[in-house]
Length: 213
View 1 (spheres, rainbow, N blue to C red):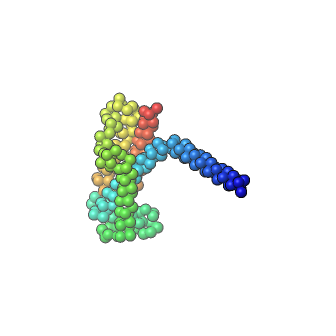
View 2: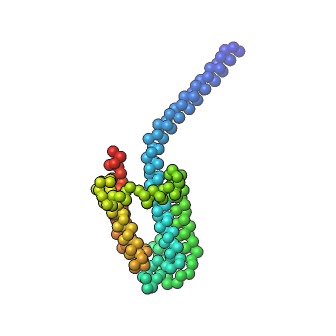
View 3: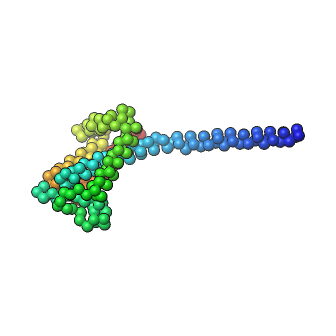
């Protein structure tokens, strides 16, 4: 009986020791894996949230303008974009533009839900990751020192100056072309705008990476 009790006690102690070792190994492994990923994942998540918020706001503006006035055609002859046709390249609806301003629930409603959902998700992530919330983030965008680079290369270097000018020119070009010719979804305007914004963002990331080194 005594030997059996010793054997049982030994087995219990062995299992407890193994569980403690497994628990310590799991905790140490989790900490080792999570530690180097936290900062990088945070930056990537914040960049993705910023992109989602910007695209969501832009899509929401287009959706509202399209419902009220139409965002295709020209200033004299405005046309309404059918989002179901535009986003599916004519697969869900035959006409990309229509002359009537009839509200189409399966097109306008779905597009607005997607746009508002993207805005809400991006805004929520930025609100949680920014001290002071989304209001502080928006204020920081307009008061950022990066805009000073438009006037001088001494603020953040030549790359940042080129980046900010590319971004500014891309935004001004798109808004000017869209308002003057009233075609907010012109593919040619998109291509020029995307090239300027993409090149500007790439230069901005490069300048920020150099400043952190």
